[in-house]
Length: 257
Image (cartoon, rainbow, N blue to C red; front, side, top):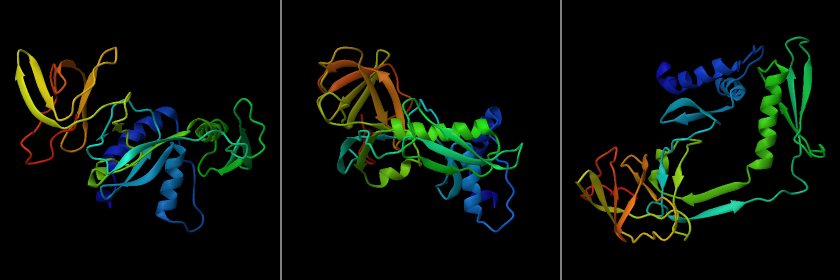
């Protein structure tokens, strides 16, 4: 039923797909599942089928610039781990994409290689609903670049806060390791002279040169900011304004800073 589909996100993505010309050109002549058909269709638009708050939705692998949720040591149950995987001799160094070409209606193969690839170990992709060589090449090259350039992972554990973030959500992450972003709880707030004064639970280190910025975690987990910040003392700082009214009553969890 319509109520089972996330039309707001699907309509947003449809505008991108129409502009790019990403089309799913496929007819099924044998039994399949709705899940498989949706997965095939969304793949053409660089998206995955997912469930978002009980609705079937799509998560597209695309550039983002606005953070959605925020995770800090205040809501991490295990420490943040950073991992980097170096290149190995036995990993993929090429992708071959099979698709049905709309001109010949035969299965064609597109070789997707980056400079230096020898094709010793090749991943084979079969694309349903792609009938254009250029679009098959785009999907294959994105897969190949993912193999080569996505080498870093960030891992931590949290509690119910993790339910705030959707699949492929774009999140801000803070750590307590020196040299990275610092974090604390907001324990007090006051306004005056055109500024907002924030009082935090942990002393902040301001010794790094350059502009300092601060962001706050809203009650629903979303990120507010970042805003240019000015030091008052180790536990206090000022910003020009906030886009929400923080609750520091401890009736609910106070904002993270």
